[in-house]
Length: 243
View: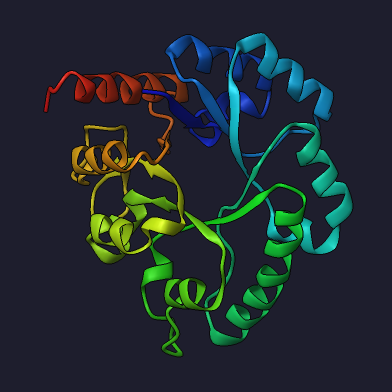
């Protein structure tokens, strides 16, 4: 199996030494990376880091506002690094007017990016499944009013709506990636295998349906690389049938 790592997991390194972070990711056995910022590096520098490590870019967590306010330059950068999956990592859609603004723009941006060979996806947290104060439910409107695809964060779906497997089955045709992660129902994240989220069941679903898995571990305790190693070791144990 090929696993990706969301580089936010090792943000204690990336912000100061992105090249070293990517190299260490490869050494752990990950095969691709999902960026969470570029920290001022040029596209050529990013390409060199990937080439030197042997890693592929699976996608990026990148800003909605950059697309709205600086579309041409933003798209040119992503095309230069070979990114085909532009993933919005969340946005303030906490009432109907904010949802309308976001969705109106997303529908336009989705088609524009598609014409440039880039898939536009949205990454959920827990709040998208919980009704806003005005009764609007963000995920429902993103699902029914847009054509965008989703990177389903299965841990946050576990926190927000308890049944991430039902969500995956419902949104199956529009799921581009799974964020496989662990934690407790109260929103405290842990490395894979150390929380109470249904990680093994999510893993089985992803394998059965051929959905790429990207690891994210959030707490950097004691540090990001240690957590990233725990996570990939756990996934390898699942490959061997150890539960």
